[in-house]
Every structure is written in structure tokens, then in C-alpha cells.
Amino acid sequence: MGHRIMVKMVGITKKFPGVTANKDVNLEVRAGEIHALLGENGAGKSTLMNILTGLYKADKGQIFIKGNPVNFKSPKDAIASGIGMIHQHFRLVGPLTVAENVILGSTTSSFWLNKAKINKTIQEISKQYGLEVDPKAKIWQLSVGEQQRVEIVKILYRGSDILILDEPTAVLTPQESRDLFTTLRKMADSGKAVIVITHKMQEVLDMADRVTVLRSGQSIATLEKNRTNKEELAQLMVGHDILEDRSQKIAHKPTPIIKLENIRALNDKGLPGLTDINLQINAGEILGVAGVAGNGQRELVEVITGLRSITQGRILIDGQDFTGFPPKKFIAAGISHVPEDRLGMGLVPNLSAVDNVMLKKYNDKGQKGWFLKYAPVRKETETMVEAFNVKLSSIDSPVKLMSGGNLQKLLLAREISTNPRLIAAVYPVRGLDIGATESVRSLLLAQRNAGAGVLLISEDLDEILHLSDRIIVLFEGKIMGEESPLNATKERLGFLMTGIDNFQEGQAS
Image (tube, rainbow, N blue to C red; front, top):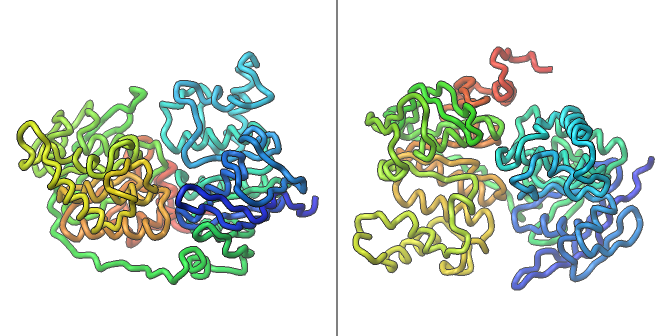
């Protein structure tokens, strides 16, 4: 087979108004390797891959695929030459089924093909790669994690031999990630080239053969995985040493803020989403929730914030029964929500930062009367942007122009500025780079130390072990167990996440 060069990008430069996204970038990916593309958000990883997949055209530079110079006019050309990409924001059609999405745009299939055969192929791929998907389910009914699995199946179904995955493990358990790595390794061994975009150094060390580091739009270095380490990679990525700052936690007396007693709730499909949940979140603690996406996390957060009605049980806030109250009452009681879908649920994309802050303020004491008082909110927005180090061109520009990290900081700033009793944070650092991740985590720790309760939903077990005071694991809408971060291991949490609760240390093979 030999390690022939599948992808060679030479001197790629791409400018957008006011920004050089890629500057003289070189990348070489061989058949039979897993190649990590490592860098912070804004380092130019996605732009580079969007050029490789025909979405953007480079201003300068040349691309060779399997030794031949190419000039992609569109993504179709890239797909035809064997390139398949799984984006961070999925390209799926909501009202259609999984099977229909998988064969969409596939040159070999038409809708008149044997449905049973297509479903069977999808099920075989699913089974082979441990990608649990139901071919008949509609996309809109699926969680983010399940949708990502559909995207992976879609590319495997097409038989691409150059695979690009953008942050692929974000929604997987450690076991599933390991299975995915095994899959990617099998693909590489069969002569495919696999490119993984990531900002997690551990991930690079776990699975990549080689890594190319991008910083500020330039390719800084390409290294063999076994000749580098976390420290070196972090330094190449950020340009300076990273300080692992963990402020001392302050102990608080466990005063319950919110209590869920024997809660049941349905999910969007009308099936049991949460079953017999008993849970208490105290002042001054971070309660971490581990679990694979789609196991009741969203339902739990929506119950706690009053957005989803329950079919059984009671919700107590500060000892008062809030069962059946509207979300407005929950907000008034100091329950604040940082949703995973920042632009869908958290912020209004076309409104400015000031208007987005205003959304939370229209009910405030100072805002009585017919007209909203703009000046104080403007001032407050400026203060927030300053305090939380939010980078944006202007507080009057639409927030959809901001990067993910800055959107998340603005959203957190807005929620924290109301001095909440409890913050429900759903995947608060998903898709953020090291710098933004650190600042978001520090914000949550600071709130906890100031005596607020935090419900932290995350698929990153390191993060959960790092930040939480207590950890619960959700599986199929039930609490599988509660662990203390001091003696919990990733293995044990991983087992609970897959529904196994009689795990003994040392039995994992």
C-alpha cells in the first residue's frame, strides 16, 4: 500500500474582510494515518478544511489530491474526489428520516431504491461502528449526539477515502470515543486518510499519528505524535505556557436551593425522558452531570428552569413548591439558564449585544412603564463586555458575527449579571478554545465560590472531575449513581454512562 500522500495543501492563503484566516498554510496527509489538526478557535482550522472540501476558494496556494492538482469549484467536486467531512454544525434536514438524510446527495442512491436494503446497510454500518441510530427516526427528534452519529454514517455510506472530522468526540463517552478511535484506526489501516480537527491535546495524544498545529492562521509545525507532549503542543497552540489556574474552593454549608422529588417528564417524542429523578442542588456547589448526549440532560435542565412540564413529582425552590409554575417564576426565583444552543435558545442572532442583554431586563424593577430604558442597559452591557473580556467589533453589531467563545461569554455574562441563585449550564465550553474554556470555567467557579449553585452538564469527563463537587450520571433518563470527584474514575463514570452499575475497579479490559 505504501504511505502515499492523499492530501497536499501548499501555501494556502485565505482572506476575509478584515481578517486573514489562513496565511501560507502547508498540510500533508498520508494514506494510512490519522492526522490531527490542532489549534485554538480562530486559528484557521475550519477555514482550511472548508477550502479542502470546496466550500471556500483559496486566494493563493495549490491543492493536490492523491498526487493530482485539483481546483474544486464546489463541495460536489470534493466529494467526487473522495473527500467527506463531518462539520460541527450538522448539515441535516430536520423533517426527513435518518435513512433519507444518509442517501441525500449520494450519487449511487435514489429515493426509489429498496428502502429495506438502505435501512439494512445503515444498520450494518451503525452496528459495525457502534453508532446507535434508528434509520426510521426523524432528525428533529434526535439529540445533538445522535445527529452527529448520522453524519458519520452518511459519510461511511458514501465510501469516502479522505475523512475529515470536526471535534468528533465532543458528544461521545470515553468508551464510544475509544470505539471511534478503533474505527478511525481501521479506516486508516485500510488505506484511508483521516483528518481530525480538535483543540483537545489529550485527544491528539490518544489517537493521532501526526499533528499539525495552527496558530493565528499559520501552520506552526507538523510533529510525530510520539515525539511531542501536552506541554509542547499547548505552547505551540497558544504561543506561551499555559497556567493551570485552579482557585481554591470555598466550602459552604449545604443549603438546598432546588429539590426534585420523584420527577417524571416526557421528551419531545412524548416518551419517558426522565424517570423517578430525586436530586438536590445546594448553594455553593457544582453538581456535575455526566452522560452521553440524549440521555435526559436537556429534559433535566428544562425541568429545573421551568421550561418543561413534569408528569409526576414536585419541584421545590428554597422549600417552596414550584411545580407547574411558568419559567418567568423560575427566573424571578434566581434560576438562570445557559443553553447549549447559544444562537437558537440563548441569544437572538440578528440583535445586538445590548438588545440581547435587554431581553433579560425588561421585567426588572427599573424597567416599569411603556418604554424600555436603554441607557442603563447599554452601560451595563459595556461593563459586562469589559469584565468578561468579550471580544466584539461593537456592542451594536448583530451577535451572530461573534465567535463561539465570545458568544458564550456574553451569554454567561448576561445570566451571571442577574446574580442568580442557580446556574444551569449546558455544555458551557463545547467548541471553545483553551483560552475561552479557561475563562468560562473560572466564571463558573467564581459563581460557586460566591455561594451560587451550578448544574454543570458536560460530556468532557476531565472537566466534570475537575470542576464538580458532586457528580451524577444520567442514562436513559435515570440517575445511574452519584459519585464524589475525589474517588470517581473516568472508567467508573464511563461504565455508568453506558448503563452498567456493578463496575469493579480493575475489571475493565
